Length: 237
Image 1 (tube, rainbow, N blue to C red):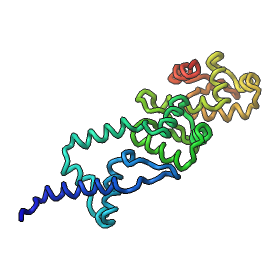
Image 2: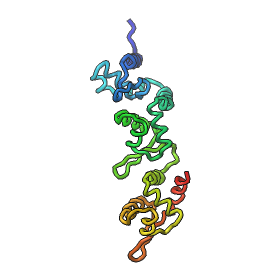
Image 3: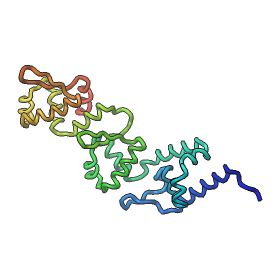
Image 4: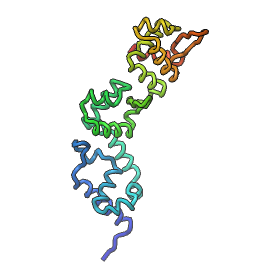
């Protein structure tokens, strides 16, 4: 009786693991089924190993085993196909389009706009960010999301976050038209209190979007030179 080589035996085990994975019902995220092909290779292999033996899943580095027994080009090809199919999922496509059309939208805004329950929302946002389709920006305890097309840097994301605040947007619009505005002038123009102006200006100055020029006991405000172009670009858009 011919004995299988060690390599052939390992390949056979991998094939069996794949079959086991596809025989299992797909998991669900908050009641929404997730197809097998959208789980990602690492989870798929681990899930298959766990179905055969929990000890196998714990003791064998499945991803390393796969890379060792399979040509690298096949693994890379799988990952490219997985990323290409990422937006075939209706929920992820809806989220991505909301983020693309509303740069800087936060979690609650996405929840209101899409009606997707919070658990499912967390899951698909994590998938989109892990695969490089979106990036997140956290400031002041609030996380906002942006399309990751490689052209929006940290400063631009920060400006977009501030522009989503109606008062700060109005302040920046005024300063574009009338640089060197004082606290009193801004308060009168926008119909807000002096302390409110000061609070928003501290936030804008801390992020380097406005410059504070002090003269004696007073101060004037202007948009920082390295932020003016980006502010104007997004206000015009």
